[in-house]
Length: 403
Ligand code: NAP
Ligand code: MG
Image (cartoon, rainbow, N blue to C red):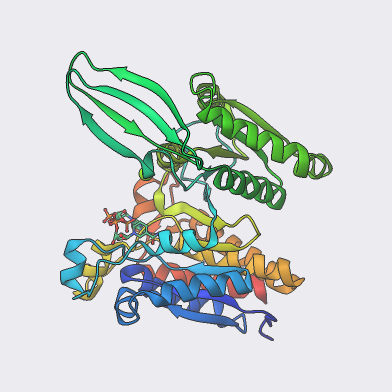
Protein backbone atom coordinates (compact mmCIF):
# COMPACT_ATOMS: atom_id res chain seq x y z
CA UNK A 1 0.00 0.00 0.00
CA UNK A 2 1.37 3.42 -1.01
CA UNK A 3 1.34 6.02 1.71
CA UNK A 4 -0.65 9.20 1.07
CA UNK A 5 1.57 12.15 0.19
CA UNK A 6 1.18 15.66 1.60
CA UNK A 7 2.39 18.71 -0.34
CA UNK A 8 2.18 21.29 2.44
CA UNK A 9 3.00 20.69 6.10
CA UNK A 10 0.57 20.92 8.97
CA UNK A 11 1.82 22.42 12.23
CA UNK A 12 2.05 19.76 14.92
CA UNK A 13 1.92 21.03 18.52
CA UNK A 14 2.81 18.31 21.00
CA UNK A 15 1.63 18.59 24.62
CA UNK A 16 1.63 17.13 28.10
CA UNK A 17 0.90 14.14 30.34
CA UNK A 18 -1.55 11.43 29.23
CA UNK A 19 -2.48 13.24 26.05
CA UNK A 20 1.22 13.33 25.09
CA UNK A 21 1.37 9.54 25.47
CA UNK A 22 -1.78 9.18 23.36
CA UNK A 23 -0.40 11.64 20.79
CA UNK A 24 2.57 9.42 20.00
CA UNK A 25 0.40 6.29 19.89
CA UNK A 26 -2.10 7.91 17.51
CA UNK A 27 0.75 8.80 15.18
CA UNK A 28 2.34 5.36 15.38
CA UNK A 29 -0.84 3.30 15.07
CA UNK A 30 -3.25 5.46 13.05
CA UNK A 31 -1.33 8.02 10.99
CA UNK A 32 2.21 6.98 10.04
CA UNK A 33 1.32 3.54 8.56
CA UNK A 34 -1.03 5.28 6.08
CA UNK A 35 0.23 8.82 5.55
CA UNK A 36 3.65 10.14 4.61
CA UNK A 37 3.18 12.74 7.33
CA UNK A 38 4.49 16.19 6.48
CA UNK A 39 4.41 18.18 9.71
CA UNK A 40 6.42 20.98 11.25
CA UNK A 41 6.84 19.82 14.85
CA UNK A 42 6.68 22.13 17.88
CA UNK A 43 7.04 20.68 21.34
CA UNK A 44 4.61 22.59 23.57
CA UNK A 45 5.20 20.17 26.45
CA UNK A 46 5.80 22.18 29.61
CA UNK A 47 9.45 21.10 29.87
CA UNK A 48 10.27 22.54 26.47
CA UNK A 49 8.08 25.62 26.97
CA UNK A 50 10.19 26.30 30.04
CA UNK A 51 13.46 25.69 28.16
CA UNK A 52 12.43 28.20 25.49
CA UNK A 53 10.81 30.65 27.93
CA UNK A 54 7.55 29.97 26.07
CA UNK A 55 9.00 31.17 22.74
CA UNK A 56 8.03 27.79 21.22
CA UNK A 57 4.34 28.61 21.75
CA UNK A 58 4.70 31.90 19.89
CA UNK A 59 6.70 30.20 17.11
CA UNK A 60 4.05 27.51 16.72
CA UNK A 61 1.31 30.11 16.40
CA UNK A 62 3.29 32.02 13.77
CA UNK A 63 3.91 28.78 11.86
CA UNK A 64 0.15 28.16 11.96
CA UNK A 65 -0.38 31.56 10.34
CA UNK A 66 2.11 30.59 7.66
CA UNK A 67 0.76 27.12 6.81
CA UNK A 68 -2.91 27.63 7.69
CA UNK A 69 -3.54 24.35 9.57
CA UNK A 70 -2.41 23.07 12.98
CA UNK A 71 -3.18 20.14 15.25
CA UNK A 72 -2.61 20.63 18.97
CA UNK A 73 -2.27 18.23 21.89
CA UNK A 74 -3.66 19.26 25.30
CA UNK A 75 -1.15 21.23 27.37
CA UNK A 76 -0.74 22.12 31.02
CA UNK A 77 -1.65 25.67 31.98
CA UNK A 78 0.73 26.16 34.90
CA UNK A 79 -0.48 27.10 38.36
CA UNK A 80 1.61 27.43 41.55
CA UNK A 81 1.69 23.65 42.03
CA UNK A 82 2.98 23.08 38.46
CA UNK A 83 5.69 25.72 38.95
CA UNK A 84 7.09 23.51 41.73
CA UNK A 85 6.41 20.20 39.97
CA UNK A 86 8.25 21.27 36.78
CA UNK A 87 10.67 23.71 38.41
CA UNK A 88 9.49 26.48 36.10
CA UNK A 89 11.25 29.81 35.84
CA UNK A 90 7.87 31.56 35.37
CA UNK A 91 4.17 30.78 35.66
CA UNK A 92 3.65 30.76 31.88
CA UNK A 93 0.32 31.82 30.42
CA UNK A 94 -2.14 29.36 28.93
CA UNK A 95 -0.76 28.25 25.53
CA UNK A 96 -4.28 28.35 24.15
CA UNK A 97 -4.61 31.96 25.28
CA UNK A 98 -1.27 32.87 23.67
CA UNK A 99 -2.15 31.13 20.40
CA UNK A 100 -5.62 32.66 20.35
CA UNK A 101 -4.19 36.14 20.88
CA UNK A 102 -1.85 35.69 17.88
CA UNK A 103 -4.41 34.09 15.56
CA UNK A 104 -7.34 36.25 16.80
CA UNK A 105 -9.89 33.53 16.45
CA UNK A 106 -13.14 32.05 17.56
CA UNK A 107 -13.37 28.61 19.16
CA UNK A 108 -15.94 26.15 17.80
CA UNK A 109 -16.80 23.12 19.91
CA UNK A 110 -18.84 20.19 18.66
CA UNK A 111 -19.68 16.79 20.15
CA UNK A 112 -18.85 13.51 18.39
CA UNK A 113 -21.98 11.40 18.35
CA UNK A 114 -21.95 7.59 18.59
CA UNK A 115 -24.68 4.98 19.01
CA UNK A 116 -25.00 3.89 22.61
CA UNK A 117 -24.02 7.24 24.07
CA UNK A 118 -27.37 8.98 23.97
CA UNK A 119 -27.81 12.72 24.56
CA UNK A 120 -29.83 13.55 27.67
CA UNK A 121 -32.05 15.66 25.39
CA UNK A 122 -34.08 13.14 23.41
CA UNK A 123 -34.67 15.36 20.37
CA UNK A 124 -30.95 15.95 19.66
CA UNK A 125 -29.91 13.90 16.63
CA UNK A 126 -27.07 16.01 15.17
CA UNK A 127 -24.19 17.86 16.84
CA UNK A 128 -24.73 21.37 18.15
CA UNK A 129 -21.63 23.47 17.56
CA UNK A 130 -21.04 26.29 20.01
CA UNK A 131 -19.05 29.28 18.74
CA UNK A 132 -17.77 31.22 21.71
CA UNK A 133 -16.51 34.77 21.37
CA UNK A 134 -13.19 34.58 23.19
CA UNK A 135 -12.48 38.25 23.92
CA UNK A 136 -13.66 40.80 26.49
CA UNK A 137 -16.87 41.27 28.49
CA UNK A 138 -16.73 39.90 32.02
CA UNK A 139 -13.39 38.13 31.31
CA UNK A 140 -11.60 41.48 31.04
CA UNK A 141 -13.60 43.44 33.58
CA UNK A 142 -12.89 45.91 36.37
CA UNK A 143 -14.75 45.36 39.61
CA UNK A 144 -15.06 47.29 42.83
CA UNK A 145 -16.85 47.09 46.11
CA UNK A 146 -19.06 50.17 46.61
CA UNK A 147 -19.94 51.20 50.14
CA UNK A 148 -23.02 52.98 51.44
CA UNK A 149 -23.19 56.63 50.38
CA UNK A 150 -20.98 56.11 47.28
CA UNK A 151 -21.98 57.35 43.88
CA UNK A 152 -20.90 55.29 40.87
CA UNK A 153 -20.68 56.84 37.43
CA UNK A 154 -19.63 55.62 34.01
CA UNK A 155 -17.19 58.08 32.45
CA UNK A 156 -15.47 58.02 29.04
CA UNK A 157 -12.86 60.64 28.16
CA UNK A 158 -12.44 60.86 24.39
CA UNK A 159 -9.19 61.67 22.56
CA UNK A 160 -9.89 65.45 22.81
CA UNK A 161 -10.43 65.20 26.54
CA UNK A 162 -14.21 65.56 26.35
CA UNK A 163 -16.01 63.63 29.06
CA UNK A 164 -19.23 61.71 28.74
CA UNK A 165 -20.79 60.73 32.08
CA UNK A 166 -23.72 58.67 33.19
CA UNK A 167 -24.91 57.78 36.69
CA UNK A 168 -24.85 54.08 37.47
CA UNK A 169 -26.01 54.07 41.09
CA UNK A 170 -26.34 56.20 44.20
CA UNK A 171 -25.62 53.56 46.81
CA UNK A 172 -28.04 53.81 49.78
CA UNK A 173 -26.38 50.70 51.21
CA UNK A 174 -23.21 48.70 50.48
CA UNK A 175 -22.94 47.09 47.06
CA UNK A 176 -20.76 46.11 44.12
CA UNK A 177 -19.90 47.51 40.73
CA UNK A 178 -18.37 46.20 37.51
CA UNK A 179 -17.13 47.70 34.25
CA UNK A 180 -16.51 45.80 31.01
CA UNK A 181 -15.91 46.41 27.33
CA UNK A 182 -15.63 44.97 23.87
CA UNK A 183 -14.38 46.30 20.53
CA UNK A 184 -16.02 46.55 17.12
CA UNK A 185 -12.95 44.89 15.62
CA UNK A 186 -13.14 41.83 17.85
CA UNK A 187 -16.90 41.48 17.40
CA UNK A 188 -16.41 41.76 13.63
CA UNK A 189 -13.75 39.01 13.66
CA UNK A 190 -16.09 36.85 15.69
CA UNK A 191 -18.91 37.35 13.19
CA UNK A 192 -16.68 36.57 10.17
CA UNK A 193 -15.27 33.45 11.82
CA UNK A 194 -18.81 32.20 12.46
CA UNK A 195 -19.99 32.90 8.94
CA UNK A 196 -16.87 31.30 7.38
CA UNK A 197 -17.20 28.21 9.54
CA UNK A 198 -20.89 27.95 8.62
CA UNK A 199 -20.02 28.01 4.91
CA UNK A 200 -17.28 25.44 5.52
CA UNK A 201 -19.55 23.02 7.36
CA UNK A 202 -22.84 23.91 5.58
CA UNK A 203 -24.67 24.68 8.80
CA UNK A 204 -27.01 27.53 9.81
CA UNK A 205 -25.80 30.16 12.29
CA UNK A 206 -27.90 31.25 15.26
CA UNK A 207 -26.62 34.24 17.20
CA UNK A 208 -28.18 35.18 20.50
CA UNK A 209 -27.72 37.95 23.05
CA UNK A 210 -29.85 40.13 25.32
CA UNK A 211 -30.29 43.28 23.21
CA UNK A 212 -33.74 44.05 24.63
CA UNK A 213 -32.14 44.77 28.00
CA UNK A 214 -28.66 45.81 26.88
CA UNK A 215 -29.73 48.35 24.28
CA UNK A 216 -26.24 49.66 23.45
CA UNK A 217 -23.81 46.88 24.42
CA UNK A 218 -25.53 43.72 23.20
CA UNK A 219 -27.27 45.69 20.49
CA UNK A 220 -23.87 46.57 19.03
CA UNK A 221 -23.09 42.83 18.68
CA UNK A 222 -26.41 42.30 16.91
CA UNK A 223 -25.82 45.24 14.54
CA UNK A 224 -22.26 44.24 13.65
CA UNK A 225 -23.31 40.65 12.88
CA UNK A 226 -26.13 41.98 10.75
CA UNK A 227 -24.05 44.54 8.84
CA UNK A 228 -21.30 42.00 8.04
CA UNK A 229 -23.82 39.37 7.04
CA UNK A 230 -25.71 41.69 4.67
CA UNK A 231 -22.55 43.12 3.11
CA UNK A 232 -20.35 40.04 2.78
CA UNK A 233 -22.20 36.77 3.32
CA UNK A 234 -25.86 36.99 2.34
CA UNK A 235 -25.39 35.72 -1.21
CA UNK A 236 -22.87 33.06 -0.25
CA UNK A 237 -25.31 31.73 2.35
CA UNK A 238 -28.13 31.68 -0.21
CA UNK A 239 -26.11 29.67 -2.68
CA UNK A 240 -24.99 27.28 0.08
CA UNK A 241 -28.63 26.85 1.17
CA UNK A 242 -27.95 27.87 4.77
CA UNK A 243 -29.27 30.73 6.88
CA UNK A 244 -28.30 33.19 9.56
CA UNK A 245 -30.67 34.49 12.18
CA UNK A 246 -30.50 36.49 15.36
CA UNK A 247 -32.69 35.75 18.35
CA UNK A 248 -32.85 36.65 22.04
CA UNK A 249 -30.83 34.31 24.27
CA UNK A 250 -33.97 33.19 26.13
CA UNK A 251 -35.62 32.22 22.87
CA UNK A 252 -32.40 30.51 21.69
CA UNK A 253 -32.24 28.33 24.81
CA UNK A 254 -35.82 27.20 24.32
CA UNK A 255 -35.27 26.48 20.63
CA UNK A 256 -32.00 24.60 21.26
CA UNK A 257 -33.69 22.19 23.64
CA UNK A 258 -36.52 21.51 21.17
CA UNK A 259 -34.22 21.28 18.11
CA UNK A 260 -32.64 18.22 16.55
CA UNK A 261 -29.22 19.93 16.35
CA UNK A 262 -27.09 20.45 13.26
CA UNK A 263 -26.33 24.20 13.52
CA UNK A 264 -23.82 26.65 14.95
CA UNK A 265 -24.90 28.57 18.02
CA UNK A 266 -22.82 31.75 18.29
CA UNK A 267 -22.59 32.99 21.88
CA UNK A 268 -21.05 35.96 23.64
CA UNK A 269 -18.08 35.09 25.84
CA UNK A 270 -19.89 34.25 29.08
CA UNK A 271 -22.88 32.61 27.38
CA UNK A 272 -20.47 30.44 25.37
CA UNK A 273 -18.50 29.43 28.46
CA UNK A 274 -21.61 28.26 30.29
CA UNK A 275 -23.56 26.86 27.35
CA UNK A 276 -20.64 24.84 25.94
CA UNK A 277 -20.27 23.00 29.24
CA UNK A 278 -24.00 22.37 29.32
CA UNK A 279 -24.14 21.17 25.72
CA UNK A 280 -21.02 18.95 26.15
CA UNK A 281 -22.43 17.31 29.26
CA UNK A 282 -25.88 16.90 27.75
CA UNK A 283 -24.31 15.13 24.74
CA UNK A 284 -22.65 12.63 27.07
CA UNK A 285 -18.92 13.23 27.62
CA UNK A 286 -16.21 15.89 27.48
CA UNK A 287 -13.87 13.27 26.04
CA UNK A 288 -16.11 13.22 22.92
CA UNK A 289 -15.87 16.95 22.20
CA UNK A 290 -13.74 18.48 19.46
CA UNK A 291 -12.57 22.02 19.35
CA UNK A 292 -11.27 24.14 16.49
CA UNK A 293 -9.94 27.67 16.54
CA UNK A 294 -10.79 29.51 13.33
CA UNK A 295 -9.21 32.88 12.64
CA UNK A 296 -11.04 35.55 10.62
CA UNK A 297 -8.48 35.14 7.80
CA UNK A 298 -9.14 31.40 7.56
CA UNK A 299 -6.42 29.74 9.69
CA UNK A 300 -7.44 26.54 11.55
CA UNK A 301 -6.11 24.95 14.73
CA UNK A 302 -7.67 21.64 15.82
CA UNK A 303 -7.58 20.10 19.29
CA UNK A 304 -9.52 18.07 21.85
CA UNK A 305 -11.73 20.03 24.25
CA UNK A 306 -10.46 18.15 27.32
CA UNK A 307 -7.22 18.63 29.26
CA UNK A 308 -4.13 16.46 29.75
CA UNK A 309 -6.00 13.83 31.85
CA UNK A 310 -3.47 14.15 34.66
CA UNK A 311 -4.91 11.49 36.97
CA UNK A 312 -4.55 8.82 34.24
CA UNK A 313 -0.99 9.96 33.54
CA UNK A 314 0.07 9.41 37.15
CA UNK A 315 -1.40 5.91 36.97
CA UNK A 316 0.49 5.35 33.71
CA UNK A 317 3.74 6.50 35.36
CA UNK A 318 3.21 3.97 38.15
CA UNK A 319 2.87 1.26 35.51
CA UNK A 320 -0.86 0.83 36.10
CA UNK A 321 -3.23 0.18 33.22
CA UNK A 322 -5.16 3.18 31.87
CA UNK A 323 -8.27 3.40 29.76
CA UNK A 324 -8.08 6.93 28.40
CA UNK A 325 -10.40 8.02 25.63
CA UNK A 326 -8.43 9.20 22.58
CA UNK A 327 -11.42 10.02 20.36
CA UNK A 328 -11.30 13.82 20.62
CA UNK A 329 -7.54 13.81 19.90
CA UNK A 330 -8.02 11.46 16.91
CA UNK A 331 -10.68 13.83 15.57
CA UNK A 332 -8.29 16.75 16.02
CA UNK A 333 -5.88 14.90 13.69
CA UNK A 334 -8.58 13.95 11.20
CA UNK A 335 -9.92 17.52 11.23
CA UNK A 336 -6.48 18.96 10.49
CA UNK A 337 -5.64 16.40 7.79
CA UNK A 338 -9.02 16.92 6.09
CA UNK A 339 -8.58 20.71 6.12
CA UNK A 340 -5.03 20.32 4.72
CA UNK A 341 -6.44 18.09 1.99
CA UNK A 342 -9.18 20.61 1.21
CA UNK A 343 -6.76 23.55 0.97
CA UNK A 344 -4.30 21.58 -1.18
CA UNK A 345 -6.85 19.78 -3.35
CA UNK A 346 -5.58 16.47 -1.93
CA UNK A 347 -8.59 14.14 -2.26
CA UNK A 348 -6.70 11.11 -0.90
CA UNK A 349 -5.88 12.92 2.31
CA UNK A 350 -9.50 14.02 2.73
CA UNK A 351 -10.72 10.48 2.14
CA UNK A 352 -8.22 9.19 4.72
CA UNK A 353 -9.59 11.64 7.32
CA UNK A 354 -13.10 10.32 6.67
CA UNK A 355 -11.93 6.71 7.04
CA UNK A 356 -10.09 7.46 10.27
CA UNK A 357 -13.24 8.97 11.79
CA UNK A 358 -15.40 6.13 10.52
CA UNK A 359 -13.02 3.50 11.93
CA UNK A 360 -13.11 5.28 15.30
CA UNK A 361 -16.89 5.49 15.47
CA UNK A 362 -17.39 1.98 14.11
CA UNK A 363 -15.04 0.60 16.76
CA UNK A 364 -17.09 2.16 19.57
CA UNK A 365 -20.38 1.14 17.96
CA UNK A 366 -19.09 -2.44 17.71
CA UNK A 367 -18.85 -2.37 21.51
CA UNK A 368 -15.10 -1.73 22.00
CA UNK A 369 -14.61 1.37 24.15
CA UNK A 370 -12.66 3.07 26.92
CA UNK A 371 -13.80 3.18 30.56
CA UNK A 372 -15.47 6.60 30.44
CA UNK A 373 -17.79 5.49 27.62
CA UNK A 374 -18.26 2.01 29.08
CA UNK A 375 -19.88 3.67 32.11
CA UNK A 376 -22.52 5.49 30.06
CA UNK A 377 -22.97 3.38 26.92
CA UNK A 378 -26.33 1.66 26.47
CA UNK A 379 -24.89 -0.99 24.11
CA UNK A 380 -25.42 -4.55 25.34
CA UNK A 381 -22.27 -6.15 23.96
CA UNK A 382 -19.91 -3.48 25.32
CA UNK A 383 -16.35 -4.25 26.34
CA UNK A 384 -13.91 -2.02 28.22
CA UNK A 385 -10.37 -1.95 26.77
CA UNK A 386 -7.19 -0.14 27.76
CA UNK A 387 -5.74 2.97 26.08
CA UNK A 388 -3.55 1.05 23.61
CA UNK A 389 -6.02 -1.75 22.87
CA UNK A 390 -8.59 0.86 21.88
CA UNK A 391 -6.22 2.47 19.36
CA UNK A 392 -5.18 -0.94 18.03
CA UNK A 393 -8.82 -1.90 17.47
CA UNK A 394 -9.34 1.30 15.47
CA UNK A 395 -6.10 0.58 13.56
CA UNK A 396 -7.39 -2.84 12.55
CA UNK A 397 -10.56 -1.40 11.04
CA UNK A 398 -8.66 1.45 9.44
CA UNK A 399 -6.34 -1.02 7.70
CA UNK A 400 -9.45 -2.72 6.26
CA UNK A 401 -10.94 0.60 5.10
CA UNK A 402 -7.67 1.71 3.52
CA UNK A 403 -6.98 -1.64 1.87
P1 NAP B 1 -8.98 17.02 32.13
O1 NAP B 1 -7.62 16.69 31.74
O2 NAP B 1 -9.95 17.31 31.05
O3 NAP B 1 -9.52 15.83 33.04
C1 NAP B 1 -10.58 15.92 33.94
C2 NAP B 1 -11.18 14.55 34.18
O4 NAP B 1 -12.11 14.27 33.12
C3 NAP B 1 -10.19 13.41 34.13
O5 NAP B 1 -9.56 13.23 35.36
C4 NAP B 1 -11.04 12.26 33.68
O6 NAP B 1 -11.85 11.75 34.74
C5 NAP B 1 -11.97 12.93 32.68
N1 NAP B 1 -11.41 12.95 31.32
C6 NAP B 1 -11.03 14.03 30.59
N2 NAP B 1 -10.60 13.66 29.40
C7 NAP B 1 -10.67 12.32 29.35
C8 NAP B 1 -10.33 11.34 28.37
N3 NAP B 1 -9.82 11.71 27.18
N4 NAP B 1 -10.54 10.05 28.66
C9 NAP B 1 -11.05 9.67 29.84
N5 NAP B 1 -11.39 10.54 30.82
C10 NAP B 1 -11.20 11.85 30.57
O7 NAP B 1 -8.99 18.32 33.08
P2 NAP B 1 -8.13 18.70 34.38
O8 NAP B 1 -7.78 17.47 35.14
O9 NAP B 1 -8.90 19.79 34.99
O10 NAP B 1 -6.82 19.34 33.80
C11 NAP B 1 -5.57 18.64 33.68
C12 NAP B 1 -4.60 19.57 32.96
O11 NAP B 1 -5.08 19.87 31.66
C13 NAP B 1 -4.39 20.89 33.66
O12 NAP B 1 -3.01 21.12 33.84
C14 NAP B 1 -4.98 21.94 32.74
O13 NAP B 1 -4.23 23.12 32.72
C15 NAP B 1 -4.93 21.26 31.40
N6 NAP B 1 -5.99 21.63 30.44
C16 NAP B 1 -5.60 21.83 29.16
C17 NAP B 1 -6.53 22.12 28.18
C18 NAP B 1 -6.06 22.32 26.76
O14 NAP B 1 -4.88 22.21 26.49
N7 NAP B 1 -6.94 22.60 25.87
C19 NAP B 1 -7.89 22.17 28.51
C20 NAP B 1 -8.26 21.94 29.84
C21 NAP B 1 -7.30 21.65 30.80
P3 NAP B 1 -11.39 10.53 35.69
O15 NAP B 1 -10.07 10.95 36.26
O16 NAP B 1 -12.50 10.49 36.68
O17 NAP B 1 -11.28 9.32 34.85
MG1 MG C 1 -16.55 26.76 31.32
